[in-house]
Length: 397
Image (cartoon, rainbow, N blue to C red; front, side, top):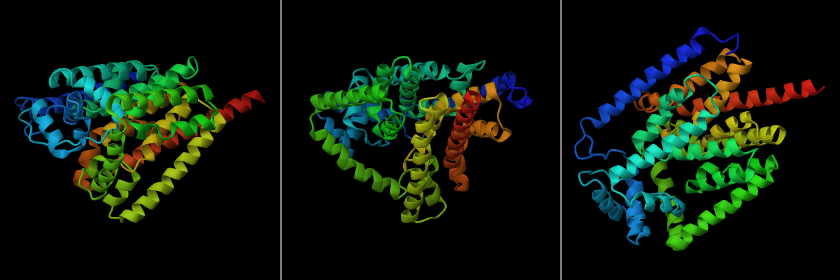
């Protein structure tokens, strides 16, 4: 820990903060689960929430009807098989690449499948992100991060995608082919990989680029072999429906930390919100590409890439903030070694706790705090990345 670190950022105190936040998350999990009956909570939702979509789509795929996952009535029937007492409808919007995993998940009963999926994802996520956090009590801090809590309670795949990306970063230099394979596996959730080809080209990482491309093509090809080409057409047709549903506010805007949603919650029109969102996205991409062009694949470049991925998406949910465990870990370690301005440390603290309060603040105050938090994290990573580059050039002189 650097000499200028205030007492509130000492390792022993960070441990206490982590224990306190973990305690809050565990109480909330108990509050959600304890009154449940037959895997259904008091709101009629299944334990694991979104995971029932994965299991149900996989069940339909195993029956030879993967296209039925995109039909409201048919996937609801499958959800009643998974959890008979649930009255909530969860729609499927994922590409056929993820249908491959969903079919595997549906090969065992719902509760067993949920526990195996969340447990396996948690192990991959914690073990990989741990490599970036050179701090005492690292595993405790990662597990206590509220993004982890959201991913578990929503039954979402955010820990899996975070773990895959973290593994790609870890193997980037020693085994670039393997790093590309991990990137290619992110094709189960393609929106999270939109920026990766651009930064690979900007930094001339051709081995990683080739490996990721081949893996993605094979992944898509395997899905076509398993389910047919028509399922991809159904997926793209469904995407227009998703945009319409989200744009009309039929989903929970308070849980969506994007620039577009932030402006819509403030009363801006759809056209203006989109225009500002894409201007911000273009600026973020421009800065990110310059960083990768100048610095290459450094840890701070990775720390900037992750929030940039979330910033360019008009529709992103709070559980995707699990992704931010990577830049938080990298920046915390970098600041501990080299020191940093107090405002940068405060950004890290706020980014760490933000997923816990984001939805509540949005629902009660009609303000979306998630977007500025993600943007601030991106700014910290970029500034420290360029500062590191300048210091290296000064040492060379």
